Image (cartoon, rainbow, N blue to C red; front, side):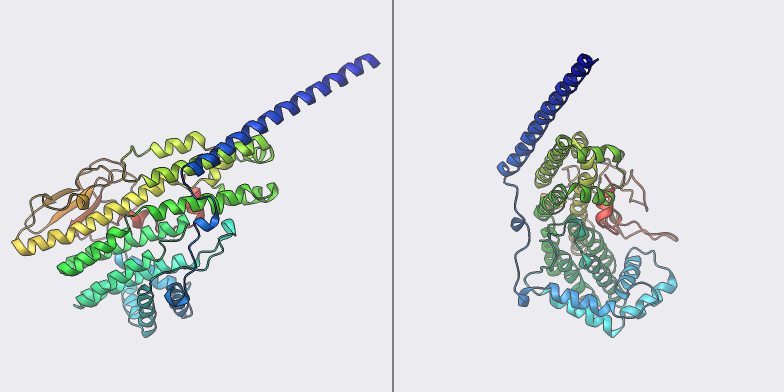
Length: 469
């Protein structure tokens, strides 16, 4: 009996030593792969320290953030039966821009926008756009607990400015109406330096959605003159720069991903509940977090995905099959990685959709000016600058058709298929294009077709970005 017990104990000891050796080897291999992922990031010139992505301090006299915040506080302090006055007025304005507002609400909107306090707030916003820089005071070391109250305020002000412009245009005050558009665009540009995807998606929504839609609707009342059109084109084209979005992807990696992987395991599992909107393997995630070789493998996969996402976003001018980035993400995404990686393919589509909206919106006024000068719309886009009319989804020129008094100008959109200029309707997922129909067809009921950026970034927040893969 004693010999048998000794043999059993020896067997158990050998098994434990073998398991320990396997564990040690697994940890060593996983750690080596993680070091390799960091080395690849450094070799590619990606930022590795927070100070490389956090915006530099701005002198108070040059910083627009304080003015935007004071304008927001001014309206938030106003009484309203709904939630805060700023958000309520912003939502009403958004409904007016996309023509989904009820008649009684339109009357209410006109009364609210005519208030002196609103005029005062918009004047403060306009003063802010005259300043050289904008840097909001954010706690960049708080991980997913970072607070971004300003982004929804900026979006609300963009809607209010758009509604104000359209109401002034309907009243015949075209100079006042067109003067509001550069303020709207510069308001969106105030988020340019923030290394957070939420901020950049709101920026895309303001420009590719609200501003482009405002410009198109104003053109139906009275197109801008050549000087104003050129100024707006310069502002719009500046938003095609992909660098703010690339910086935000690096920011996601450093501000949120690295923050999460450096949390104590117990705290990380608590935070996992925030990220894991649709993760199919929560039990495996818990086991992986507690088992070091798998945890290191998660970290390595996360870095690889974020590295490749930044690299491909940086090369956004190169056309690639729509699902290519998704395939790369799927090959590395598992467990905790599933929860931490934002919807990168969707973000890239949103940026391309904004590019399409910008190019369409820049080309339309030129077509209208050509008709005013020659009495007819051009038969083709020949003669326009090629860079202006290239569809970011196909690389070919935007598709254009004209009649005696109308034109259709469109991009084939994210499904990379020509749907004959059919605009997106509500939550339609496919078989639509990014379209400007001039003049816009009037519908008796329902919401008017919206720009792609309006649909994809209507209320962006952290949960939405991490919850949609």
